[in-house]
Image (cartoon, rainbow, N blue to C red; front, side, top):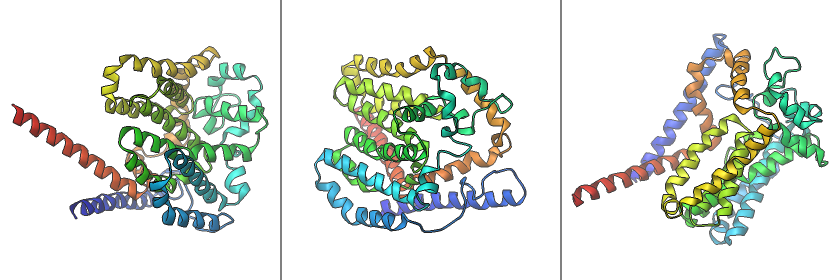
Length: 377
């Protein structure tokens, strides 16, 4: 009873945060403050509608709610991962398809803000990488579109390489983000099983399949970035729980790629550190284990640096570019907390309740350890 009440209070607090962000955001917009968002706190429009993907979305949601928990409980582990990935892909695709194939998927990465607008400028990839930082600022000749300028070049190079192997255009790029992005849920299951328990991972599977984050996965390159980071964490979790060192090297490789997909993904180092902390017993037993992720970590940065791209220089120039555009006009005092309300939309209220339980269990474990220590003394 106490647990349910505390869960409800956590969910209520998250809902109040979202409500405050929406109301204060609308008030700021009415006062002509430069939020540059139409439906605060989200960069979105209020446009309820149905479309071709609506029946599919309802069908997938109903199937996961009705059959997801029993299937997750009895499927063998590897088929469960594949099923979760397939169901997550279907859920993400059906949501995007509500806007139709072109508006919802094929044209999402072809706008004037997106990566595919500059594919032709990467005919000579090494030369373009050497010159990349010269086109970040708005007043530079031939400046990059916002998303190309706002990310390290591995993001754009991914779509360039897809184009080179015959998968060019917005349709293939959109499906790449949907299919790869939907695998992030399977990565979370792998990490949960390694660090916590298989039972917990199985219970979480239906929630991960229907996670609200699917809206941002389909279709956005952010879904692809999230999957790379999630698999980096999952492979590290496997490595520190006694699996092959190859997983550790693969984790480092993906962490290195993540750094060159999005500057913000450097924060995943904190999550990686948490995984190492949870697996510290194995790390102490085999300290050489740390050499494998570190070795993998340097591969992608070494390649891009050798090709002429300077990550630190680009990041500092990007900060200047940020203040040249809408970022320099948006009120920091609002978004510094309203972005947390955006996170509630992404993860959903069930995750808020789950996080509350995690924090409570950590606190309970700490108190128990302190009591045991006092009694021993």
